[in-house]
Length: 384
Image (tube, rainbow, N blue to C red):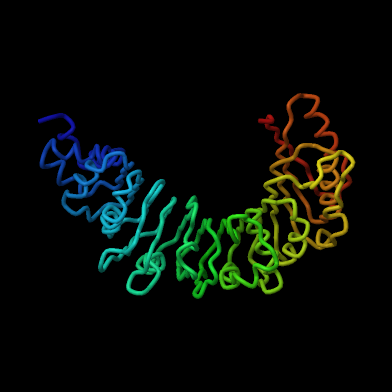
């Protein structure tokens, strides 16, 4: 008998967790003991390069104790058959699907995922309905303890196929949601949600306009975020919140807010910020300053007239893309000069030379600050 087969079961399980599905299926040919032990290997991964290898794998005895499942598809023929197979692993707690051409038209009859806590959907397409309901909605409904949901990188999105999308996920604590917005969200139950990352577009132009309020109604979804503590918004999501700002609730539990800004952010952000009365950490992912005309003479007023900074309770301000230009420095003066509760400013700055670094440091340290407790910390990275 080979040396590996003489190892304790726990060690064989650990070795098996590093194998792809194809490798694991070959490994089971070594002995009956391996074939039986394979049913309790905690991690199964299939990269989609070999359809035959995966079919060999799923033809093994039902793996009732699989904990993590990863399926990446590259072949169009894999769509329905493979998605049905992977959704039968009833004790999976972590499932990763997609990264290619995975299509789910309907769920297997009687499917139930009582242990599924983390679901990652990467370019997964949901078509049609399942028993009269959206297939995506059905998938969520058969995952009663789902805590983490990540949906991204589908170039068409759920909203291309469905006029409405529901999130009846009361146990969900983390949501990463990138998609087009459907016409409505009939049911939204996100009462346990702690952190949300949102990238929500109105259409392929990715620019929200006031007239979109006549076509789309994401209010139920926006209200569903009322309990979140950490909220991360792309510039598309910032603009969406701006369009529906009047009907949006107060987000009293949000303590950390991350914003990616666009060249129209000055119209959305002031009113948006008033919705976060207990905000402690504000993160700006992009430049503080945008110009329609790229000339040295143009210096927009951006935030100079906005009183929201004077009453903002932010204690930590993080700027992740600072270039030290005159216009951006002026915006920093408004923030530091008006945020009276600031204790720490962390700046991630672009600088190509030691002289550039010294100038940025000197400029920032010379800015008058409304808070006597405010400290400035600068981290540099080279321009790409």
